[in-house]
Length: 254
Image (cartoon, rainbow, N blue to C red; front, side):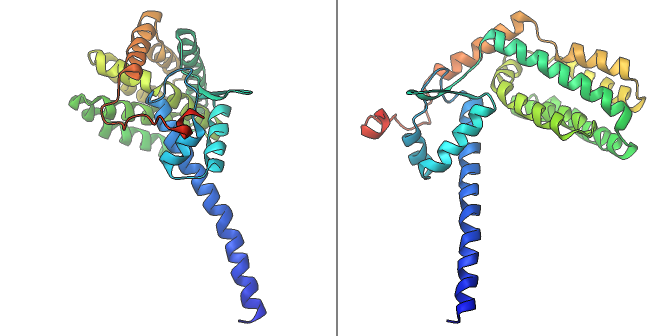
C-alpha cells in the first residue's frame, strides 16, 4: 500500500475515534439523565459507575464524562472519597427552581416583544393552534411535553440561546415533579387558556400584560409544591416491577 494511503487511513482512524468517544459520552449522558428526571435513582443515592457502565455497555470513561456533566448542571453532587450522588429535590429547591423559571421566562417574554419577528410569532401561533386540542386527551406525558415545548418556543423568540439552554435544563430538573402534579391534579383549563392569552399578548407586543400572565401561570404555592414533590418521592421509593433485580456481586458493591 502506498505510504500516502497508509497516512490517509491513519488520519481517518484518528478522526473516527474522538467522534465515537463523544457519541458514547452523549449516549451515557442522555441515558443517565433520563433515570434522574424520572427518579429511577433515589435522592442521596450513591451512583455506581461500574454498574452504570455495564448496564449501558460502555467503558467507565464516557460514563464518568456524563456524570461530570450532570454534576455541572446540578443533577448530581460529587463528594471526594464518596463519588457522585443524586441530588434530588426538597421543597426549598423546588420553590427556588420555579422562582428562577419565572424570572427567566418573564424576561424572555419581554425580550421577545422587542426582538421577535412576525414569522417567529406566526410559528408559535401555529404550534399552539395544533397543541391546544391535544390537551383534551388528558394524557399526562403528552400534556407535559406540549407544555414544555410551548414555553421553549416562546423563549426562543427572545433570540438568546443561553435563555433557552437554561430553561431546558431547568425543565429537566423539575420534570418528574411536574409529571406527578399533572397526573394527580384535575386539568386546570385556566392554565391551558393562559397559553392562548400569552400568545395574544405577544402578538400585540404587550409586554406588561404578557409578563403578568406568565408570572401568575408559573407561580407555585408551597402546598402545591409539597404535594407534587411528595408524590414524586413516593414513586421513587416504590419498586420498579419492570427493572431487573439489583446486582449483589462484587461490581455492584464498589
